[in-house]
Length: 245
Ligand SMILES: [Zn+2]
Image (cartoon, protein in one colour):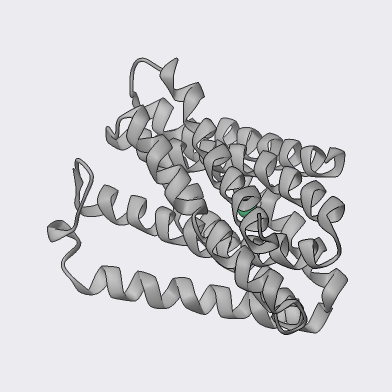
């Protein structure tokens, strides 16, 4: 098997792992206001925690580039929000939802898919340092993808999207990982230079999505103290989880 194919298959595993994040939603039977609020708070916390990890990884390659990437990530969300908001949001349809719910789900899938590009590059670049290093980074990203699948499902499931389709969209959001890992592995030096920008971009986009979309929505539907506690606990859990990896 060629080396590039090995890298592709490893990175494909990370994408499939994301789908596991839908599993906890098999056990949530009702979709109440509180379910919407607390799912959103958990999604927000997991994304914040993941962003800390991305920034830490990015600064190892270059601090200024990571910050510049972060600003680009914020601009990206502002532009995407502008494009989605230009059409009357009532007309927007995604899965079973219309209007505001559809807009938020679409934004979530876009943000999480875009953030996977940088992680795919990280997988490819790490394989440039040898198969052992590549395998370790792949496993770390695969496991980190599972709570991200939880985050995506936590936004989609309250809108009535089935658990199977939540898993499908979770896997979809990670498909850039196998797609980017191969070119990053083949042209490792070029991609290594771009990596801190990409990691910063992913973190900036995710933090902005959390603060501008997920938390305001969660506060609208749930108790202030409970939303804040759940979001903070999820963020800390995600950071500890990444440390442990
Ligand atoms: Zn991630």
